[in-house]
Image (cartoon, rainbow, N blue to C red; front, side):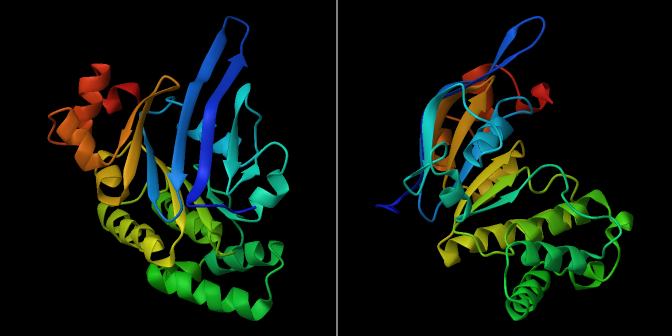
Length: 254
């Protein structure tokens, strides 16, 4: 069912959460496409709707209305087929604290029913690319937040997926680790992988994304390459673009 060059298609997606006091519009009729092989960013503050979008696309929650497809597979009717094509790096660190980094990686490889020799080869490759060799030998209960984020990223792609969902992948990393991770993510383009990245880091979006969607309060406000958006709004960076569109800074929503 894979077709043309569209990896992800989102059409009029809505998600409402009902609380005791109100009906919250987490997503309010958003639409966008992600092309095969591009790094596409959802840029906005916490609470903007970025994680909700990913959770719908990976089948964790159902939309209130609208539709979405992964390489032509409808996420509601054929989610099992869509899941075969994706890897997910969530905000929350999905690791076992009393296993080493490598043991965590190999465990998730086994969950994908990968052959043991391929798990080892793939783990060696990813650990080397992220300079994670020393950390991978130790139990993760002693890891820093940044180390856990790096391990989370490795685990998310152990199965060599076609599409990678990265939800705030560099949170907690020091500047050096963040730069190394940016380089690692950027190289996905050379492997013809598609990336949907959520972030509130302006520099991250500018460094990595072919296109970004500006999102706030569940609304998708504009889409374009960082360069085109900066030109359109006569801005020096994406922070200024966000300010020009919304009247506030991204960090004001944090």
